Image (cartoon, rainbow over all chains, first blue to last red; front, side, top):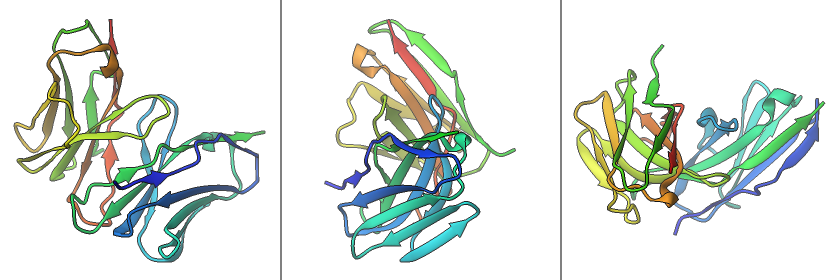
Length: 112
Length: 114
């Protein structure tokens, strides 16, 4: 069974620090990975996606993918209290249903 | 703005009383999904449509049905809700099932069972 694992947290960081969110996946067929932010009681909103090994940067966000280690991470630089949310990782495979599998999310708290 | 709209935002129903949740999209996406999400858990896929092709997840209870009468609309029918069906129900769309195609979510419907 395909699994996407995330530490549920909460991860607590001070304002201005770098928050590092991690995700591991079990299916080596997974090829693309998505990070979503979900505020309490709200729906997930896409932050960014990555499908090539290495880093991908978008503003304060950097996604890192290491397919050999089956590991994807999201770095948030200069963390703000408004970044406090649950961050969901999703993995999509080649073949099969092509439907992303979601992790349970990591709760991030950025304190002033 | 193109978007995914779910109605209602909050739905209260009685144990065993059928309920329908609706989703509409202006993105003209081919794929529409229904997820169930309970507190602190990952969204759980119930089913999805690729155009008119319906795909049911193996562990989706028979109590849950779906309809997609046209590209824009998709409905989730819960025939006899039980207490365990109380959850947030998320509708999502994607243009297709390509590897780099993200899902776009509606604001969700929070379902409560009395």
